[in-house]
Figure (cartoon, rainbow, N blue to C red):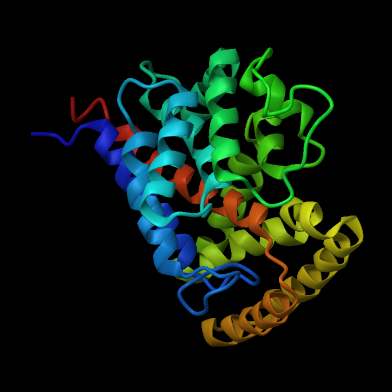
Length: 289
């Protein structure tokens, strides 16, 4: 009997999270080094807890987000994965949509269908997770009842948050930049861990990380962007995995010493890996009944 699609999606989410942890992403938690008071096992446990809620067969996007966040808190007692959940919930919902359209098209339809109830549930999840540097907004603050759709609310935050920006641009950076980096790494014969590192570095060299910006300000975020661009150039010139990992881990130690965590770029990396897994699953859905 074929495995239900919801279970395949849950496994894909867990696999994407584990892949992200297996690469030495500078400044983030990974299997080579803890960071910011957390260890890789916290994120592995969080992925397992969140997966069934993200991939539930008949749930709204908002319900997926809130269920996954609450399950994460029940398991690990801290915010390990809010950005990941906010990105992967609409992707999981899109993958479960009926029809012959591709994943990107289904994702746009999912984003277009979001309403104020999705926003209410997502706001509750964000308040529960209490992310660093959340602050408040003059309009449509997450502490107040939602009066607009979740996509509209995210669009208002798009300039200051890379995760929110994906809701506004149809996940263009996930389906575009992320998938291109993954394909390029594979074409160059990179293994899974190195390919994941290169996807992360692609985001980190293109964007000033908005998690760092919220916590430390724009100046630090831009300085960190420059450091990532310099490290990425070194990675471009490196030819073997060991050299690439040494470069990444040297920057990792330096960033963690300062407390800088490029968490938004890590969130985008998980989403890009999740899309890659979903694209491998979806062509087989109709063949498997």
